[in-house]
Amino acid sequence: AKGQSWLRAIRYLLHEDRSSAQLGLQAWTSAIASCSSSTAWEQAIGLLVELKRRSVDADFRTVGAAMAACEKGNSWEHAIGLLSEYSAGVSLISLATATSTCSRATRWAEALL
Image 1 (cartoon, rainbow, N blue to C red):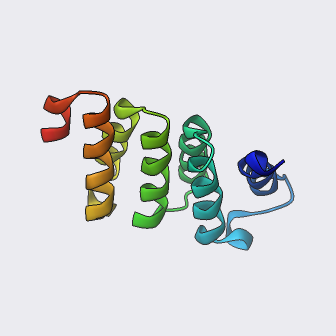
Image 2: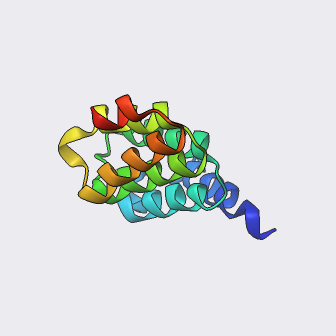
């Protein structure tokens, strides 16, 4: 089913025979972005955790994709957490996404931090 593309992407990434070097960051970013299209924000965060576990540095696109997933899932807490954890690697778009996520949840104080 079309709405399950994120699940196929995660299965592909986590297959035991594939190393991080074989996949490249773009594959991880694409999988995280597919999570945002289906509001699977928990899985997007899980992929970021897996990247860190594999010692792969996420870039601003990867973090932005995870933040977009948090926004679609109305998870303002995780969006703010990503801003805090990846503060050196976020873009203006990611900042706007975090602000939007907080404002949708009427968490204006957090949006201003």
